[in-house]
Image 1 (cartoon, chains in turn cyan, red):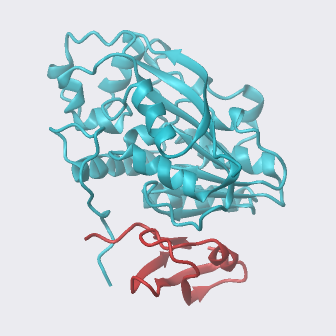
Image 2 (image 1 turned 90 degrees about the vertical axis):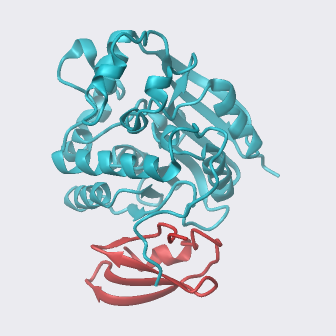
Amino acid sequence: MAKKTKSARRSPSRASPAKVKEEDVRRAVRQRYATLASTGSSCCPTDRSTMCGCSDLYPQAEIVSLPEAAVAVSAGCGNPTAIAGLKPGMTVVDLGSGGGIDCFLAAKKVGPKGRVYGIDATHEMLLRARKTAAENGYVNVEFRLGEIEHIPLESDVADVVISNCVINLSPDKEQVFRDAFRVLRPGGKLAVSDIVLLKDLPDELRSDLSGWSQCVSGAVSEQEYIGAMKKAGFEKVRVEERVVYTHEQLSGYVRQAPVADKERLKGLDLDQLVASYKISAMKPKK
Amino acid sequence: MKKKLMDILACPVCKHHPLELTVKKEDEREVLEGTIRCPKCSVDYPIEDGIPDMLPPEK
């Protein structure tokens, strides 16, 4: 059997910066999220002035209804289930499900006849998510280890594909959207929250691997992001919400990275550099 | 992993479906250890701790 600890290599996509190797990106991302899973910390620092705002992403009523263990390791930048239009009985796929917070929210909305499949590349996160599901009686959620560029599901099975602050981490975003399109049923919906670039990223940040795993260095412009969606075949692409990050929010966020080259990041103007977007798109009915 | 999952599981590389399940350990609810084989690629994807590892093999 082939050794299955690393992913298949592909040629770098347009979105992939020349200085950073795809495999290094994947490794850095997995390491960071494995650490996050085992330490049980969220992406937000405790100091509110520098937090990325993730604790404010979900309505309070939704947060209190969720298992604490899932909220604790949540590292999203939005709340995709809010724009997903989920109904009882639907089949949902969550790309980069992490600790499972969005899967659990979706599971409540699709009910016992619905199904939620979480896909993540980090074994530690999935172990945590599975444990949380079992302890809290979620029977309509399943998790499996997989790459969001190579979704291990049949075509045309999902009513909705959601993803929360994950696609920016992929060195091949076009491939992610192509495979999301494939697994959606005709007429199915893609609902994502993600980080989008508003200006060109300073080189210092672009080449910083910790910046990749912090959802910044891998981000692309709105034009490129939506362009990749449309190229995959999606239509009715709509930006539903856009939250711009201040210098204080972003610098606080990037500096938390355990391997960040803090000297290199000094003096950079990070104001209005990135924004958190909620975007929806449809797979045509025919 | 519930056995029912095999209904929609496809090979991450060639997208072949159905895949072949071999159970090594299971409880009343689900498969805990085993392998999922893609007959087309001849690749075995392990199931560990109840989680199917469907990461594409390293080339």
